[in-house]
Length: 226
Image (cartoon, one colour):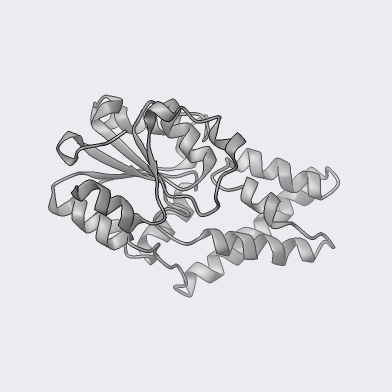
């Protein structure tokens, strides 16, 4: 599937792992916190948490802590504090090509929206600290919707905000959960994965709405320039 720039009336971005390199902070935070409980979390499990809802990820952490719900809640609070400390120090890196792609869209008068699983307080802090907020026209946060990714709700609500059809938009995502959400919303999607997907993962995706798989946001910009 190809997407012509003239067809795009809004570009919708995921945040964590797509525009900013925060996944490494989340992962380091979980490793640090769980070590205090005598638990080691594998990279495979951390990768499964990418783009997941808070409920989904809480369930994973709870299982690692022998099903103790109170302990899992305590661990998440400690992880959140770890994340806040890192962000407060200004240690939020933008993904390669993020500024170039956002500037290109802005120059072509394409509105930019963000649809993130992060709650509003954390999402706003990330956007401000990374200096990306000035580029963003509209944001929908994970705690503002009932059903998170991989359900399509967050993307459908962005379309509703702009009163557009799915074919008037494009999505840029980095996680399987995010890609499932955007393609279930029937929005043409650029996929820039941090972790390569297995064939069985891609089989879940409706390829009719997958524009392509790219190594960086620079490649997405190059594709739009064609």
